[in-house]
Length: 479
Image (tube, rainbow, N blue to C red; front, side):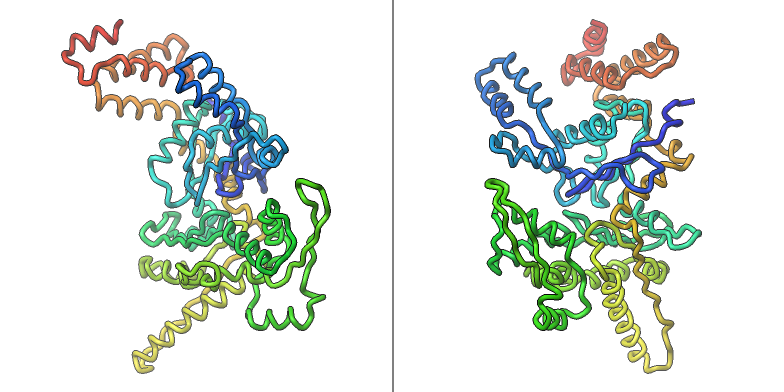
């Protein structure tokens, strides 16, 4: 029996703004870490300089120090604001996609060893990915997890499916529904039928949580609030999380603020990062104008004017016709930017108007001879929707079936050998033979994957491409 199956799996939900990590079986993640890496720019510059001077030893030393001297999360943000400011911030994930794999590997390293404080060789891992992720990104993830961290098993789950699993409304599992996942960097509307994503109907919009923050920052700046420039984004983010709500009618909300400003206008107090001097600002219309960008996006982005309810309706209408009623009936919210007060009520009301208008139009076109059955629209909101993806992963990784569907080290090695087999039959044969021999010598205990992959790559680098003769190839491999 694999001893790793007796330990809880590690669940990591990789997000653009924040990464949630913890162990399977828990209700909430153990840590919520900003997805940012700060690397010491001094060593990075030394690496570039030594590369030009061809000083291998200095280049190696600078590269090693750059790999060691880095921080993630809140500590990275604090280092970037320090007086010395020798650290360069890198955001490895943008709009739900990993765009810097070196920074991502460093980020995972700190998450595993410094935050979770676990040995990756002793735990199975469940990682999440965006529904629009390319297969190459999945390969890179497997490469890092198997070769760098030597995990015994890895499962990569699609975020909306996990969010749907976390949004069960009854004791019966409902794996048909629409997931509205609004993160910090991306917003996806994903239909799922019986647990399978309907890929052709996925919709995304260029407005997410970070855009709400930027819009609030812009509103406060235009109103002339005295917020330090270097702290304005952070203040806007805290205003969004603490004071924002969704209104039912924007005109009425303006009137309420104008008639009773003392009741609705909030006050924010802070200290300037550089001088430490106190400052204060008023929080007014941006309290309801921030979330309004999802329902009237033209206020923020003139290039995109389709409200979120219309996007959801188009998503469901493009799905197979026999799934549409079930999709309208189970619209699940996920992500921190769906936590605004009354957000689900406003979304359900606007979506219901669109659906009812379509039904009335259909009845009128048929002359009233045929009456269509009303379509039930239900937007599901639950207390844990902020961490819905992570919680769904925690539930999945707690089931006994989870360990049977993982990708294992042996499978990863076999696929790597098959890929090399396309280039050179002799290399694949020798690699397989060496692997089996070492397994027998160690009583079938798997040797570290990094050793195996290094051996294969080392052999591959010694082969001419193409190899002139089979005899020469045989001699090189045995030498």
